[in-house]
Every structure is written in C-alpha cells, then in structure tokens.
Image 1 (cartoon, rainbow, N blue to C red):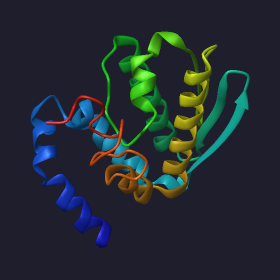
Image 2 (cartoon, rainbow, N blue to C red):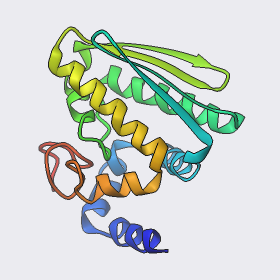
Image 3 (tube, one colour):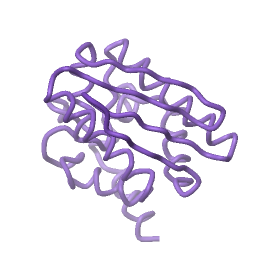
Image 4 (tube, rainbow, N blue to C red):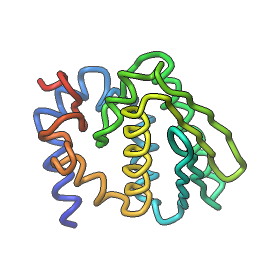
Length: 175
C-alpha cells in the first residue's frame, strides 16, 4: 500500500506529467510502460544469470511462463531497436544513458530462446565495459527485488529521477 501511495505521488508529479506529454514517459510507448510494469510485478517468475566475460557480460534472463518469456524477448528487442536508432529511453538506470550515448562503441548479440533471452554485450573500452557490467547488475536488482528496486532508482538512489547523474530523466533532460 505504501508503494502504491508513493507511486501515485510520483506519477502525479509535474515532472512526469511533462514527460508523459513529451513523447511518453522515459521515451517509452504506453505499451512499453505496461510491459515494464508487468515484468516488475511478476519479477519472482523471472530468473537471471550473469557471467562476466572478457570485455563485458553474458546474461540469461528467462521465465517458465510463456507469456512472460515473450515479454522478456519483446522488451530486449525493443531496447536494442532504440539503441540502433539512437532513440534514448530514460529509465531508473544509472548506466543506461552511457550505453545509449556510446551505442556504436560496444557489441551486442541477442539470442531469443523459448524461455527468454541470452545477451552478450562487450566492448574494448574499459569505461564501456564497466557501464555494461553496471547495467547488468542494475537489471539483476530489478529481477531480484522488483518494484522496490525501481522505486529506489526513481527516488534518487544510485542517480535516479530526482537527482544524480543519469537516472530516469537522464543528463540534460531535466525540465
């Protein structure tokens, strides 16, 4: 109930109203936002393994629920499309703005599986390797903790929407 109250206060904030009328919250479509919220709400049905490999990570994210596995595949495919088009999506991630700004500087390999996705992301640039690994840890936190991890990112923990670098509004995106 407390999270619901906090979310209502955040979603009613002038900052988000501005973003919602400016091409969608976080640059995501309403369908993407619905997908994100469903994945957060069902995070206990998702498993994730992260392996550090030279220059980056290999992640396996999956679910035994066929509809949720389809959502994972759709989400990652959508994010990679945004990266390839240079269409930045702002979110509760400190590392994602760096990855968007440097999308051409790292390699991405997406394998769709019946239960989800396997991703390899690597770079020869140590700073990008750090950002790739940081993002993998952030996503693992979202999978492990669900909504509380998202709320921490939105409220300023680790550079969330309300302050710090990166985060939901992203650098230079403050209203």
